[in-house]
Amino acid sequence: MHLSLRRDGAELKRGAATPLIDALSELFHLNARAGQRLSSPGLAGPELDSTGIVGSIAAEYLGPAARPVRAIAFDKSANANWALGWHQDRTICVAKRHDVSGFDLWSTKQGLQHVAPPFSLLEHMVTLRVHIDKVDEDNGPLLIALGSHRRGLIPEAAVESVVKECEHFACMADAGDVWVYATPVLHASDRVVPGRRRRVLQVDYSAEDLPSPLEWLGVA
Image 1 (cartoon, rainbow, N blue to C red):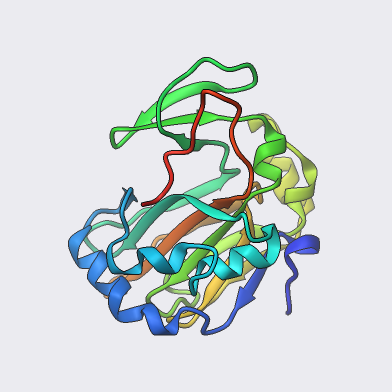
Image 2 (cartoon, rainbow, N blue to C red):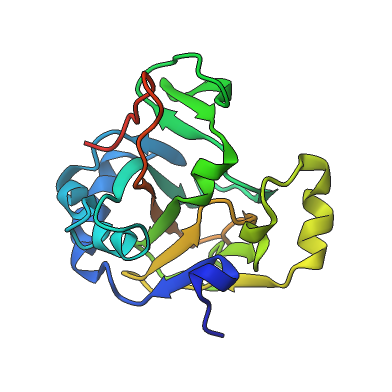
């Protein structure tokens, strides 16, 4: 089944990041945590810019102003294994807290300042997941509810019913593949089976500035 970002909320770029596998593997060696938020992604950093291997994919959808605004290294294995229930990603990472209308639910994650922005901002973002390992049905593929990104901000109490209304899709991948997602799409994942490992670099992109004095923390 071929998915499109606009219609389904996800699209696959086969082999797009294959040249980065070695550099990203080193990144995961240095950041051996289940979900490590990164301010500097090491050797792969320049490739996240809008002219780089990964960033140029985001620029296809957001234009040349696309920039990485958050990066997280996910590493599922026997030592760090978890399941993820259905949800929308609703927060962004900013440089410093400032009280601005429409930005609320402030939180600190791994020492970084997060906030829930107006949904209109999330609607104009994309999230890229760069796969370091092959992902099949036993290796915790991301599950998405097709078309759910077009439902707006979904109240927590309504998530289950929306998931039931949507067709589900398991996002399989080979090492080097890049999945592009509409940031607000409903998604979930299962644990990996014993003996497997699933490493993914997830990068959020935006082409919009935040209202002053808020600033993106960004990815250096």
